[in-house]
Amino acid sequence: MNRDELVNYLNNLLVIDDFKDYAPNGLQIEGTTSINKIVLGVTASQALIDHAIAEQADMLIVHHGFFWKNEPSVITGMKYQRIKKLITHGINLVGYHLPLDAHPLFGNNAQLGKLWDLEDITPQPGLVRLGRLAESVDVEEFIRLVATTLNREPLHLPGGPKKVKTVSWCSGGAQGYIQQAIDWQADVFISGEVSEQTTHIAAESGIHYLSAGHHATETWGVKALASHLENEFNVQVKYIDQFNPV
Image (cartoon, rainbow, N blue to C red; front, side, top):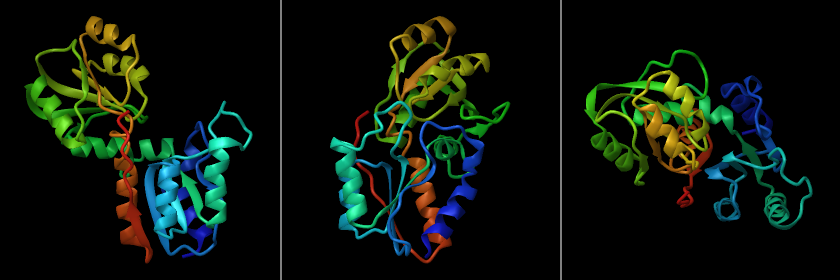
């Protein structure tokens, strides 16, 4: 498949023009024009790039790519080594950050909602979602569901009711959005990371907070995109997970 046709398809699918992001979305490093094999993963680390090379991939699609705002613009050290390997092996690097969090079908947040069987009742479009369980459950039961589905025990900062039904969530490092969940009167807010003040905000605002892992909450979008590409195009597709405890 032609690289530019595929990138244009993905850019339109994920409506990248709707986002003001922290890094460029779409093609970040140019490689070969003919795409026969695609590797997908969460972060364009050296280990994932080495996997892509071993798989003889023509394209690497990630959620966390390169060229973030406020990072040094020089290409030295770790960044140089990564980019050098991509260029040497003709691998295209394609990154989708916020578009792959927010997409209504393939986004991390949409996939998490399906994973936890939440009816989406979000009042307005945006990254942060609000959902409803079919029936109220003990908060410990819901925490076990999150732990089982993500294969990771979340950090629980208590503050909400013993029985929970409404859940707000946003993948990655979105702990700062807890106020949105409070305004929606959610029983639980889930994100990937946690800040010192989150403990007090949860306790004083009547909401449970679950820090479920940045990586663990952001594998789902690239997995869903991998399945979509495999079904839509005559190319080899492989998702590779890199362990990350954060």
